[in-house]
Length: 335
Image (cartoon, rainbow, N blue to C red):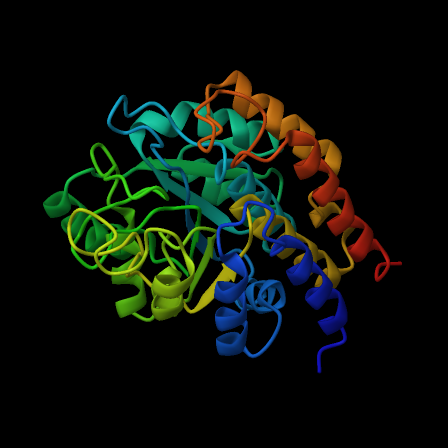
């Protein structure tokens, strides 16, 4: 058993506490059984398996009210992705490329900058990775149609040659090719087909890590049968197409969490445990700053349909407190 196992277990249990009553606990149990260890630990181990200075393609972002505007993005996902990118640079000096809708590049840029990561072109990001002088990431827009999405997947993998693919709170299509929100509403319009990139990466043997909280995200295909019996609107026939909201795209490791941002917090903590580097921990101070920046930049609390600092209908103070608890668990093991 890993020397970090007991701490990984505590982090897993913390972030899978189902405060939103969305059925995450059975998904956690199923994914944990497949991984054979705590999920945050499995995720951290996968990240440390990539070469020092390697390339990570990261994706997040949900056009949460796609039927209204492609510019209305959700605040669960961006801050977690930013925290992971920061930790990946600190631990591995990784070249991070974040793939997202073109319409969500401005708020994602602000979120990364608030997390200490500069947004630069690919040449600069690679140079900063090579010499270790600055945490940088490159943002790339992805097509929003099926045909263009499939074509772009192979081109992008050939161009960037990623050592790992990571997704957090990124919706994937169901068995009928429809992108559903957690209430069973089709919101695929204007949505980048990034799940096709993820599927292509898996087919090529690129290691894949996904974080999700609702059954409709990339990665949930790994536990699809449990999703159907545990998550609202996920059973066959629950949605207008005759299927459910469950995403078909799988992953090598699926980090479940009651809120996807929390899953990223746990992974950062598990990475800190393995390096002894406290800088990798996602702190409550950083969480508070990111919540404020995401609100200022128009990202929405999708559960309530408001631009505010609550996430998935859970108060901002709860998110900050959870981050503090994750930090407390981790610091007990660090010198």
